[in-house]
Image (cartoon, rainbow, N blue to C red; front, side, top):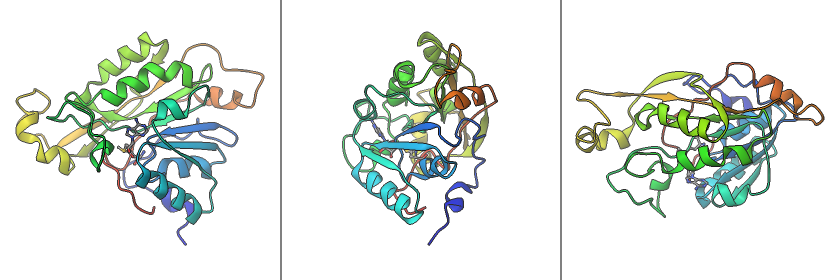
Length: 241
Ligand SMILES: C[S@@+](CC[C@H](N)C(=O)[O-])C[C@H]1O[C@@H](n2cnc3c(N)ncnc32)[C@H](O)[C@@H]1O
């Protein structure tokens, strides 16, 4: 039986987990294996995890069961499955690989990484709905490749009413998807010849004071700390973690 701690010991530096604490009401949008959701649950958070892919949902549920860690894993699009609910923090490592096919894939493995020709199809939706997903003062921990333009994410989050900044940056080697698209990425201006690493970036925080009258107050306070989120890979595997 794997231990929950294993799920959190990733070779890539994991985030400062300050906003994820005992009693926090966390959602992970696009949970994949559920690894991040498990880390949050292991810290005592009340975790909802959503994924549009059944294999991911089943893997996350299995991982929750293997780690004896309670996770609420929902199947479907993150917007519809979280409608009318608020969380803090919101975690997301969405699909963000730029693709020669501008249409979003509906089946197979590609929805896990393909996100339109600029890689922003899912990122933009998350930025736009962050204000209705977050408690006042809540934190969005959103990770994506610098290839998708961090500045655009910051501006979009700001337009949505959040205080946004890049909290952390980390260089990771290109995975197989980006390597296979080198000939397409270069003429798009998304990569330079010889690029072999991409930068992962981001976070955002909703404006206004933290709520002082409910159990989420601690999450709001923690959000003032420097935060960031990294993930194992821009791709995810539906594996046991
Ligand atoms: C890059 S993977 C990240 C998986 C995991 N969070 C991690 O960090 O390893 C993106 C995940 O988002 C899911 N996804 C893509 N579009 C989605 C949507 N509209 N609603 C919910 N999940 C979605 C994919 O199925 C995939 O599991």
